[in-house]
Every structure is written in C-alpha cells, then in structure tokens.
Length: 548
Ligand SMILES: O=P(O)(O)OC[C@H]1O[C@H](O)[C@H](O)[C@@H](O)[C@@H]1O
Ligand SMILES: [Mg+2]
Image 1 (tube, helix red, strand yellow):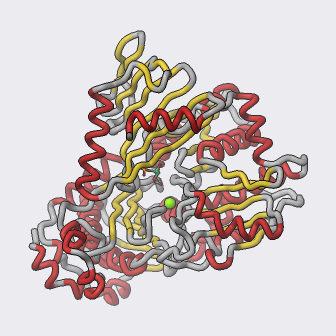
Image 2: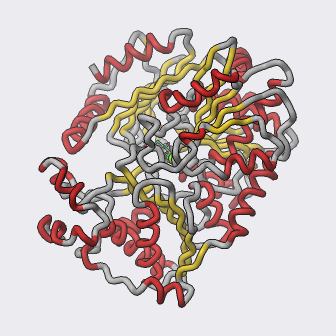
Image 3: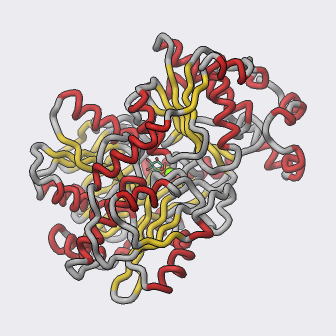
C-alpha cells in the first residue's frame, strides 16, 4: 500500500487542493491515513481529503476499479449508469468513475448535470444496466461525499454483492496508479454515453402516474431543496399534477455544495426548516417541505392552530402508510415494509387494515429486497415502505427511498384534508385515536474518530453484557440481539430470521427501545417507541441510563 509520503507526492493529481490540505492539523491529516473507506448503511461515505481513509480521486478510482472487476466477473459486457448530486467534487468523481469503468470495457451512461438518487435508481431499471452508481453523501455534512452502489433491480447493492465489491477493492494494492484510458477515446467508442433524455421524462411520468391529480384546494406550500438536487424536478412535477400554490425558499433552492444557509442539510434537524418557517409565516403557509441533498429524504412541518408542527419520520410514515392503505383498498394481498427501528404504530395500522407489515434491517436495500421477493413468488402487492429516518417509497418504479414521488403525495393528502377543514396534525391525532398513541424519540450521539468508534463499541458491548431486566421502571419482556440473531422472551430463545446487524432491542408491554451504531455517520442511536403521554420524560430517563 502506498505510504503517506507517496500520497502527498501525488496530491496534485488527487483533486484535493494542496493549500487546503496543508492548513489541516497533523491529527486531521493523520486521520486520512488511519484505516480505509468501507461500505456502511448506504454505500461508501467519507470526508473529502487526502489518504486511503478519505474521498479523493484515487480512492474513488479504487472503488470504481473494484466494481469493474466484480461486474466483469459476473457478466459479459456489463453496463452501468452514474448520477451525481450537488456536493463538492461530485461531477469530478462521476467523471473519474466513468473513465475507470469504461477503461475496463464497461459501457457507462452518465448524466450531464446533477440529478436525484431516486432518478438514478430508476435509470438502472429503465436502462436495464447491471449496476448504478450515485455520487452523494446524502444528508451528511458538506465536508463529506460518498458512493452509493446499486444492483440491477435499482436497489442499493445487497450485502452479498457489496461484500464482493469490497473484496475486489481490498485487492487493489496501489491505488495511486490505477490505469485508465483516454476519456475522449472512450467517448468516441461510445463506452461513455449520456443518459438518454427520455429516461428523465419517463421517471417524471411514473411519478405523475402515481399522483394523477392534486385536487384544487386553498392549501399553500413552501418548499426547499436545502441546496440539493430536488429543484427543478419537484416543481416541474407539482405543475404537471396541477399544483401551483407553492413558493420556493429561493436562497436554498440553488445548488450550493457548502449548504451555506443551514447548519445541516438534513430534514431530521428542525433548524433545516428555519428559512422555510420564516417564509411560511409571511403567508401562513399550510405546509413547509424540505428534502435532503440527494432527494431521498423528506421532512414536513404543518401549520396547526396557528403554530408550525414538526413531524418526525415515524409520524410522516404513519400518515403516508394510512393514506396508501386508503388508496389501495381494491388490491388484495397488500404488504408494507418498515425497518426494525421504525415505530410499532405502522405495524398496528397495517395489520388492522388487512395489510401485512414486514420488518427489515435499517437500509432501504432491505426494503428493495423484500419487494423483489414479493415479485419473485407473486405473494404480496407492495403498497408502501419506509424508515424512521425520513425515507419513504410508495410506488416501486424505483427501489430506493424517493422524496420526489413522496412530496406530491403528501401534498395531495394535505390538499384533500384541507378541503375537509383538516390539517395533517388532525389526521395524525385521528390515527392515534384509531391505533394507539405510539410516540417516538431518537437520540443520536456523535463520537468522532477512532476514539469515538471505540466508545460506541463499548456502549454496545455494555448493553449486551448487562442486559437490564427493567429500564426506567419499564419491565423488559423480551430482548432481540441482531448480532447473535436471537430473541429471548418468556418462552425461551428464538432465532431471528434477518441478517446479522449490530442492533439490540429491549421490549416492554407498550413498545420497545433499540440501540444501534449509525452506518452513515460517527453516531450511536437510541430509538424509543412507546405508547405514552410523556415521551420526552421517559425517553430522557432511558437515554441517561445508557449515555450518562
Ligand atoms: O442510521 P444510519 O445508519 O445513519 O442510517 C440512517 C439512514 O441513512 C441512509 O439515509 C440510508 O439510506 C437509510 O436507509 C438509513 O435508514
Ligand atoms: Mg439522502
């Protein structure tokens, strides 16, 4: 493996600005050489910088070369489609990946401007390529970028495939000298070609076909792309389905790799809505909607009794699931899919409406796998999938979470409610009455660097070794350890039929908590899902037990 000195001698070819690198502290420089980038929940994600543990031209070429080795092993003349978001170096990384793939004989389609992650998922399916690549770090801070890799179904590559790609990447010993051919010659040979325009229009038509028409109402909306990829495509679709009562947060709807107007371009964070709230208040807008930079996550804030109410991902998922159930009443054998750390409320709603709810591990790739399984044995009709992390998918013309199809869907629901004199908050309260007052709270504790990784590991180990019989006064009636793949309850020990994952769940009479290290950010997460009137109080007590 190249030494740090060899890396520093080639900084001019790394796409990393030398003066920026020289301004870093020695510790920060050294972190770039501690370890290597690896697959997480959603592809490979890392800080842009110099070294094998950073995103730069050489590590991006290495991932591309590993992918090309994998694809050439499994397929004659494989093809790939690549898209990129509005982050730093996304277009440049897209170029580098296209050249490496094409240099290894792989025909590569690439978009010529930024596009959303759901459009990439769709392009894989529409062009029938063998893989897809999306250059993005999704909701992560601006100093990150990343590579999401997709399989032929348009879902993020499943564990088995990503393991093989990782093995090929690991076999590359000299990432500073990966051979590539001349880009112009590759384009000449049509080994690098633009994504046909009809792929873009065909995706939009699929969304329009899902939504049909948004009923006229007095509903008004403020929308923000948080400097990401969802503008112009979301406004174009809203106009196409007859909705023009929206205003864009203009300053935020311009691509900006520094996400300058927000502390974090993540709709999970309430501050991401600050400018939307300011604009919304001027005209008493009913809904404030924001998507994350690659437009696979959506957050919503609703005006109710004169105040703006922030929904969490579980609540939005429950509202949308309930809506999809009402929209698909004529379909038999319906199924919905959620992650194991997503609220129980969705399961109660589904099963009380004769819809089967399936639980999968965190990661939309597992929802995509479930849809593929339903199609393979024609067992169920998928109507909705979601995760508490603000990711939803209604119609499976894509196989990843898709904020572009969900924004018009939530507007359509809100518009229908508006005509009944109701808000999304009224609808949420009705769901609580009908199915149970499930409340959720998420604590995400950030621990950076290697010491942070060690601390997270200790917390998880401690929770396993000292599995409590009671937590904050709640009796533990069952424990699920997804690393051991076993559930323990009063009836004994049972196997968990899901792949291994570093997650522990403690169950109570009225809900559960889960502990899980994040796979996209240096965080450990505590998820609380309980029927309670005081989620803040009980959740804080539980958090203090594990994190004080
Ligand atoms: O909790 P994490 O591992 O950070 O993942 C949180 C979310 O990150 C990404 O958005 C993935 O696409 C989601 O599937 C996942 O739920
Ligand atoms: Mg995202």
